[in-house]
Each structure stands twice: as structure tokens, then as C-alpha cells.
Length: 46
Image (cartoon, rainbow, N blue to C red):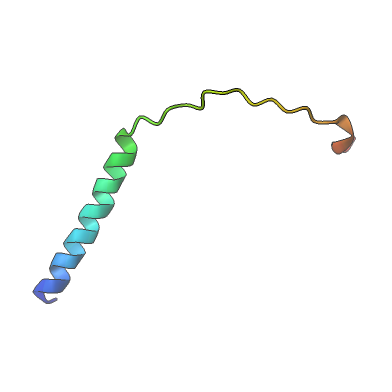
């Protein structure tokens, strides 16, 4: 492999690892509003 391919491969691997670490440590806030929906009984088979 040429030096350019090695650098690109290393950049892709570091990007994937860095993105994975970011997603693992990101404190995503929970939804703050409640959602309620009424479903008719006719929609369910008996």
C-alpha cells in the first residue's frame, strides 16, 4: 500500500472509532412531553 492509502485508511478508522466513542458518551436527553393516543378496539383482531 502506498503512503496515501495508509493515511486515508487510518483517517477512516480514526473517524469510525471517534464517532463510536462520541455516541457511547453522548448524554441524549429523554423526550420531555408525553404522547398519548387512543386506539379503538376494532383495530385489533379477536
